[in-house]
Length: 462
Image (tube, rainbow, N blue to C red; front, side, top):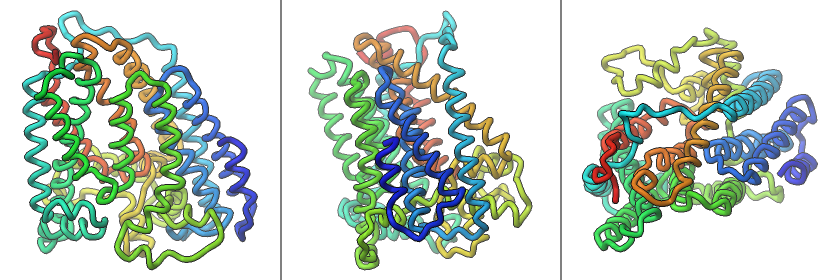
């Protein structure tokens, strides 16, 4: 991962120039590979940090290196080569800042909980209510989209079904909001219900002997197979479901933790390029024939470095940095555009429209989002804070999963939230952030609905 794979990619024949951007990209790839190896080999499970370095290694390291060697990118890079050089250099600065933030959090003592406040845990009647609500929301989505068969067809067919169900004729903005609302409530609550029930079964022998709990878990798993399968969902959402479920079902297994990171790398490098042929109905016929093993990494949506370079060109050709405006639109995602007429669009959409792209559903990596809003210093500060928070969350997850018995272990909210964040980190890092906020808002509402801070153990899962 540190030398063999980057070296094999870098030495492949191709028309790409071995210039400053190439060497910076190779450095980034080796650095991310070394950090990912340290995540795999560490004795302590670092879920969020491991997901971060897995994304950086694949999407910001190996894939862009292959694109540099072959001199071809999934999305056109419209600016000069110097913008690409600056983009790679800024990504390097961001990952180093993330490392520094994680280092600062390593020796900080754990915060003390107020004496009159219990740990955040699950309220059993509310969990039952969440399970029933998730069934109803998923059933509504299935009926609205035309039945179970649509979810096992293709991304194109389910996209057309969603547009028809949400009334595309009412306008693009209204259709997009309705689609996000329908799919968010149809997929997120049932995933959270599965994670809570899985955690309950893993940590409680009593629960494993209750037919009702086993039946709810089996039914919830079946609903997730329908609405959260990899055929009809974005690939990064499938990684979210996979990572969250594995880390919840095996909270104390270093083998599963290491296997999940290795499996994620294999899926991203091997399975996703092959799955691109079936992503839409016409994809299989449009795949060009080639002898290069690197071409699949240039055909899929690993366009993060290129879109960062385009964001730099966009800022240079327009009004420059937005000084928090994009972040304000992300934080206030729930405010309709009819109320906030000047609400900013997705960063990927803005840059794509400036580029003249017909398809503006483009990525906007977190590096580009932070740089466009706050400049290089603000971007570095953002990743410093991200590394600090990720390290703190990972430490709290280890602490809450250290004990495998008792109400606090069974109903611990951090034991559920951390695996979910680790999986969703792929979507947050890829961006745009505005598109990712809908599911986050739904998840926060569901978590708040089932959380209690009472000390009475009868209010928690037995």
